[in-house]
Amino acid sequence: MSTIGSVDSTGSNEGVDASLPLTGERTIPGLAEENYWFRRHEVVYQRLADRCAGRDVLEAGPGEGYGADLIAGVARSVVGVDYDEQAVAHIRAKYPRVQMHLGNLADLPLADGSVDVVVNFQVIEHLWDQGQFVGECARVLRPGGLLLMSTPNRITFSPGRDTPLNPFHTRELNAADLTELLEQGGFEIEGVYGVFHGAGLAAMDARHDGSIIDAQIARAVADAPWSPELLADVAAVRAEDFDLLDAKDSDIDASLDLVAIAVRT
Image (tube, rainbow, N blue to C red; front, side, top):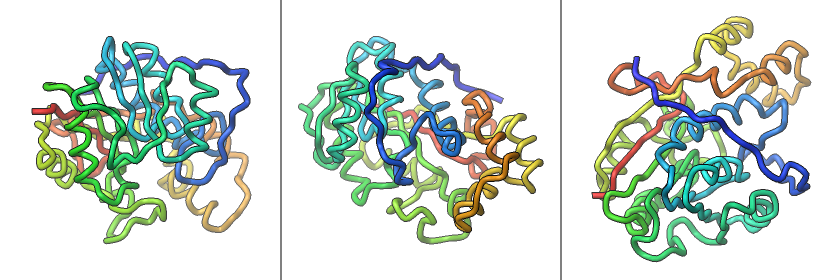
């Protein structure tokens, strides 16, 4: 099966105390109980960072900022935009390589044609006007620029539901929805990929009644303590335990998250 290449992540300013609260809306690195979700997001940054090498990059909705900082290690420049004042302050303090702006993703505070790449990972599902945001991405990109986007696959994330399970999500997408959204926004799809569990995570699934995801959700719903076995497995997850596979070579509807690489036409 086809995969996308990877780069190693790097940290910076480890001594800065600029923590963010765990709200469920953003992924926080360095927490054992959150490690599965952090690594599931981190793998996409690692595998797509080379597409940002030597380029001017906007991350629209950088969350905690670890991914924008990873990209800053290879990019010419990285700008971040977020509506959350606390997140903006946190990233400015902890990741000074990222130039942060407070702003609305539906009205990006950037000039037309000012960046080469827009990164938008695990954000589009939170937005009310997804089409307007995609149009803003096209506006700020230079001709031929890239939009790199990831989002939970609605089919597996909220199975059998018309409304998202996650209360922070407004509209979740499947692969066909994501392709249509980007094409209507003026982009040509270069590739669509899916995030899947690799062999190590499949073994963890087997140890936890078929799904390490369901085991974590059940604990959260019941407000129950973590078992030592579950916590040890979740804390041990690495980005390398996930596979990022081309939709042409996999069942994209069975993927956990969707990843699109799109070109501004």
